[in-house]
Length: 379
Ligand code: AMP
Ligand code: MG
Image 1: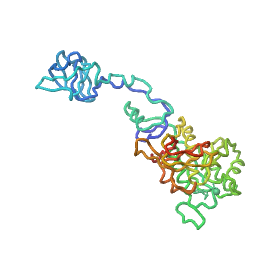
Image 2: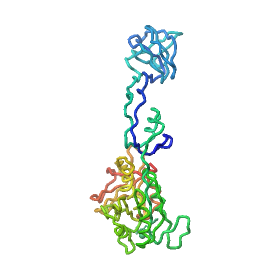
Image 3: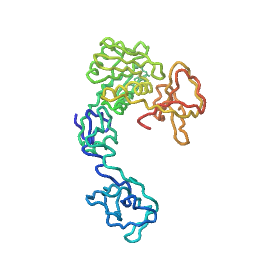
Image 4: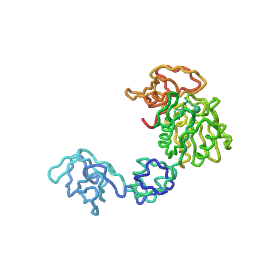
């Protein structure tokens, strides 16, 4: 699809973009000052200023020997000049400009063609369009760009206890918050969410709604993948021909997550506990959306920071705990937040990252280096 640069933020390029001319198209001054011949601009020497060149001025005349021209940032350096001396390093007496130091050849000039040659590929197929990429496209006049369509990601929550978010739940019911977090995460990952609502914990209802979901590019389910009697998502998928690549992961929260292909479409069954749903989406679904977009999977936003409070967790599973990293001191520090387990959305709403505790490391001391998975939406 062809998209205007104004609307293409976050999309993936389905074409190459080439320069329409050299960049910069002329020898460009990077400073306000004087265009000189470096051999003539010596400390104490004076050169007669014979005119000025503003950004955008058409420059045809060469600099005459023994003279200089006042020049502005972004203006074209005339032939005969090979340096620009910053105005701060000069003094002026009438027409005469004096220099404090020796000018170096090429100083404060970006030579024509040094950023890019003419007809050079500057954006390639599969690149994600951020603000810099879009500015580059705009610079070369590529105002409409062929982009890949956002993958459509069906979102299906499951559970007999789930009600719509605008309904008042009964005393033992809960609102469908997972569809909201999943739709947001799909958007951030570059996909287009298609929210299908909720399926009851019954094979027939699941089957019907999964079938609808398989019309999209990928399907993400929440809930129904644990060991309970009414966790029927895997069975329902199997009945529709799904092949699973994994049906458990050594992480907490998120252990019961499953991934498979069903009728040619990738299907993720994420555990229903809200924080489990969020973590497993970031780890498994977001990279898949990159691939479905025609891009390479982006690396997870993992960074090493200093642990501010000692931690102890059971070994055997990698933990992803709601935490806050702060950049107040010389080194960023992370502290895990108090939480009530993977149903505690309030804890995650205070967090800006997940603190990662590796499966083989039960205790981590204050000051040790730890990884955090940043929340891309708030950091
Ligand atoms: P499940 O994975 O189906 O066993 O669900 C685990 C927990 O997550 C239960 O406490 C559910 O009530 C909760 N849960 C499941 N689906 C949702 C949802 N769509 N929104 C909010 N919480 C959910
Ligand atoms: Mg359930």
